[in-house]
Image 1 (tube, rainbow, N blue to C red):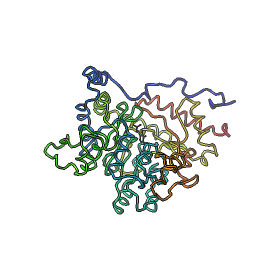
Image 2: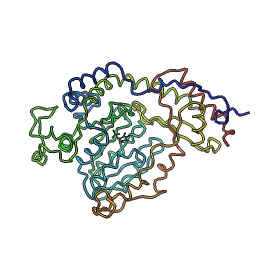
Image 3: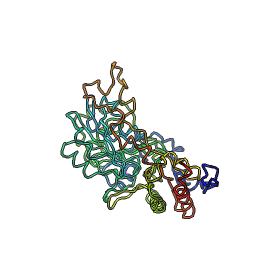
Image 4: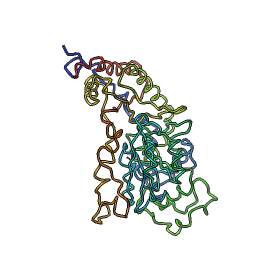
Length: 429
Ligand SMILES: *Cc1c(COP(=O)(O)O)cnc(C)c1O
């Protein structure tokens, strides 16, 4: 007689408690704030966005924050600010969402992808230095799945080679690396605040930095109405604006418009206000779940290995999977069985970036050759088998259920679902 639900047995969780996973948490306060923007007709203004920026910078521990229309825009502006241009290269991890790297192509640059570490899921510091060439302009680092990257060695390499570091903090708002908040570690950071992220403001993004020049360049790139204006942060300091930016005042140098819709800024302000207490509850719930499955050989919740570090809102949180310790059952099969028990589990993470055609063949500038080569770059394209840790992720990591509330009884059931599959692996062979 089959025990596992995938084989017709009774599932552990018969009815999922949707509230446990619902995100973002929207209250009357969000609705009120957004309604006020609509009623005032100030969606395209920037007064509320500037307030949001001030609060965000204070929370994240940076001097400057600049709101954008989405995280992709924030990354594009950050790359341009760091001097990435035609014929240049950036170094980025291969396991990430495309926006970490793809804006480089629209600047005429190419991307040299590194492998990841199996425990941080972030860029492997050992795989960076040999990729640095004369045209390398920046290293882009992702705190993947809310796990802080291995920052100390990465920053040391960047400083040694005099390279900018761009942090893609779209997964790790509020996460802490060795006592420092993610989003404040690199030279400049970009974060998505789209609705699915742990800090969700709608369709929006945020740039954070301590570097005044990078901040001004991001403004000049996509916030034309603010270029050369006295800064929001330092009214007496207008002459700090770079000489090479000021003549272009009144036009965005990127030919793009990156302003945040103020309905998003208004919602973002309310979300930020409650964010620390909400992620504290997520942290408690996720740690409880990870503790609960810790005894199972072959399956673990991935938690940051660094001291004085946290995973913030645990966005896209992952577990590790070792098929050998699971009687050879594949990660995909295991996840299918756990799903049948009523607990969310999906194999793998983002698709490996280095294998995608867009980083090999896209002729963005219509020059009759791939853009990654079109400006005299060396060929840094990589095929299958070159970044094994990344390429193996469909077999080695899985998405954990992302609890937003600490409901012990409900989480116990999810632990029981995983335990049940692990105890009946023979049924899957
Ligand atoms: C979501 C995301 C982005 C892009 O942000 P958008 O707001 O969707 O444009 C960039 N990088 C990573 C790692 C992301 O997950």
